[in-house]
Structures are given as structure tokens and as C-alpha cells.
Length: 322
Length: 298
Image (cartoon, rainbow over all chains, first blue to last red):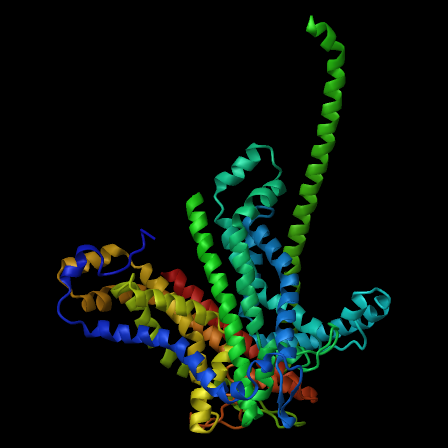
């Protein structure tokens, strides 16, 4: 922090300020507006969802049916869908992302190849969500359908798996959405984990080698434990991204409000619900959707704050080691 | 004396430990090698989906990609021909609106945060809020714009879409602009004050020109992000079959066109969605690459 060139008002420079600075006031207003934006978002969405909050209160969270034309609004299937799809996506993306981060921070292959892989993963982040959706419809849905019809037969008699892979096998399903979601959060996990791994001082690795550790003993025993808080932060921030991801999910998950335990059945998420129903909603449905949006904001804000705090803790910790 | 007893045992010991150590180190290096291979394999595995996406977008998007695609309106249900002209215009227009709204706020906030009061409570609040705003789902920006603009003006419009995108890109512009300002050498500032310049003169004539290329990078990244977004637009700008007449009416965009056409049962429309995807990916890539180039110059 010390070498950052910030601030006119530090040290003796402050003395040179001449008179009231209008530009300063302008900048202050812009800053205050930026901070106010977040508050405005929360207040406005709360305000809009007030009729629904008054009508259904906390029961909204536990209602398992969402039938707008009968005025029944329960958000539980979408809450569960958001949680399950994000967690499955993490389950796939974490090992893969961590492997790539390790690969990028080690010297298995020459630098140009590593840079090519890094560029590729960054490209994944640049592809628009809706293109992932289109690709998912063309590629992942047929794959999952094929896998699903195999899985329902193969896992018929295996206790837990036969509820997770229960017939009928659809293409638009929780599994399809989670797989594409995993791909979409991969760049987040890779980038932040890589930063954490690279920040581990070289002396620690050299120490491990000097004690006779092999490369992977050094990675698993020294480097990953040291970088662990950063990897945890990467996971949390990726979880936040996964929960808010909308378009690809809305195109792939099937948008059903029925609660099922099968990963091969259509499901829904909060973000997908908003994407699908806002355009044609009226009256109480708008208010209920606003309530759902408020829940989504609360969830993502909490997760992101947790991720930020872990990231800050990481920076402090590695600063101590250096 | 002791050596006489130890001598016959020594080779036995040596042999035993040696073998044990050899076996263990053989196992260790095997584990090491297996994990290395696994790691490299997984890294290359990540290439497959990306290559598949690029391949499909090119293969399915290129056949319809002609100049007339940019000059014609989207085909109606079941019809052949047409283009994505109004969607391209709509996307560019709404990204432009978003930039016009978000850039002043982002850059002025960054100047306050880095130049005027870096350690003030407001500056810390701005940094924290900007971080949190980057984490807010893009669809929430749409919900917010719906509440603030669509519900109050009574209709879907390009304004609402642009406003939603502005909220989305504000933190990107702010945080990159802050980094750009941090990159300006302190010696420049001190020299400027040494010559008797005021705060405003220093910022306007010395700091900002030097930080400008890096700020442009942030703005191009914001353009790339905004152009590809769909969620903030589907119920703010909605869609339109026609050329845009004013910012007060529903407006087409590439991303919403892809979304709408992806679910229809007409092959021609689906192919048009792929062509729109190709155009969108090219647009986003141009924005990203130009961001890198601007940054390298600096």
C-alpha cells in the first residue's frame, strides 16, 4: 500500500489547496451517488415487494407452489433450485478450476502453452451468457438426455442414485443447467485461486523441497494450505456468481416450479423465475417477483460480503508471510 | 569391539532400509507423476467446451452472415430471410446510453476515492459498495430498472435498458478507473504542485491525461460486459420487430433476439440466433481485445 501514489491531501501537499474546489464537490456528489445506488436498489425493490411481503410474510419462503393465475406464490422450489444448481456447479468447477490454477502456477509445460490455457479460460468469461444457453441447447441437452436415459436404467436398484437419477430423463434439467453453470464459474475460480497460489512465497516451496518433498508433496502439504483462504474466497465468490446467473439457466433448466429430487427433471431458480415471468406479470405477481428478487439480492450480497472478507483476510495473511 | 558385532549386521540393515526407501520413493514419485498427469489433463479438458462453443458458433452462424443481415429486420415466425439489423443498432444504442450514464459517475467517484480523500469514510464506502455491486446479479439491475423506469413511465424503453446496463457497468468503470489513477506516478503530482498548480489543475491537466489509456481499458471492458448481457434487458427494453424510432419505445437487442429465437420451433429463426451469436461474440471480442491493446500502449 505504501508505494501507491494516492491522495493530494496527504502530508504537506494539503497546504497548497487554493480556495473551495468545485470539482471536488462534483466528485463527492458522484461518490455519494455511487454509495446511494446500492441503498436505492434495496429500498426500491423492498418498496415494490411490500404488498407481497404484507400478504404472505415469511410463509413465502416455505410455500412449495407457484401458481400465478390462482394467486398462490411460494418460492421454496426456486430457493432450493438456486442452492442445488450452484452447489452442483461448484462440485464440478472447483476441482477443475483448482487443477487449472495449479497447472498455471507450476511449470509442467512451457510458458506459451500455459498462457494459451490461461487465455482460453479468460475467453470462457467473455462469452455472453445467452450464447452459453444456445450452445447448451444444441450440445449439452442431447448429451444429458443420452446420459439420463442410460442412468435411469443403470442406477435403478442403487439406493441414493435412483432418487437422484429418477425417470423420466429430460434434457431440460437441473443437471444440464448445473453443468453449463460450472463452465461459467470456472474462470472466477481459476483466476482467484491462481492469484492466491502465485502469492505463496517461493521460499516456502524451496523449504519443502529442501526437506525432500516431491513436487506434489510440496503443493498439497505447503502451497495449497498456505493459499487456502484465497481458494476459499474464490469458491465463495464463484458461488455468488452461480446464484445470480440467469440467462443460460433460464434456457436450460426447464423452469418448473415442481419440487423433485431427480437431477434429470426440470427445475427452476430465483433468477430464472424473474427472467421468465417479469415481462408479462401484473399486480400481485409483480410484487411477488420483487419479493423473490429481494431474496436473491440478500443471498448474493451475503455470499459476496463473506467472499470479500475472506479475500481481505487472505491479503493480510500472505502480507505477513512475505 | 562393537564393530565386530555390528559388522555382520550392517549390510543387512543397509539392505533393508535401502530397499524400503527405494520402494517408498518409487511410490512417491509414482504418485507425483500421476498427479501431474491428472492436473495437466484436467487443464486441457477445459479447452474442449470453449472449442466446441467457438466451432458451433462459426459453423452455424457463418452461413447466414452476409451484409444484408445487418440491413434487414428480423424474420417473422416461420418466415425465411430477414436479418438482425435493428438488434445490432439497439445493442449499440443501449450500450451507448449506459456509458453516457455510468462513465461520469464512475470516473468522478474514482477521482474522489483516489485523489481527494483516499482514506475517508466515504472513499472506503465507495470501494466496498463498488465491490458489492460487481457481485449483484445482472438480472437485479433489470428488476431495479423495471421498478424505477418501466413502472413509472408505464412502458418498456431503450432508456430503461440503458439504465439497467449503466448500473451493471458502473462498478467496472469505477474500479478500473481507480486502478488507472493509482498507476499515475506521485512525482507528477508533486511536480505539478511544486509549480503552483491547484488541485483541479493537477487532476485535470496532469493526472487525468496520464491515466486516460488505462481508464479507456476499463470502459472497453464495460462495453464488452454490457453488450453481452441479456438479463437486464428482457423486461426493460423488451424487444421490437422494427427499427428504433425513439429511446422511449421497446428496443431490440442482439442478446434478447438470441434468447427469443432460441426457443422457437422454426429452424431458420434458430439459425438466425446462431448468426446473432456470432455477431455478438465478435463484438464482445473486439471490445475485449481493444481494451488489451489500449492497456499495452500504456
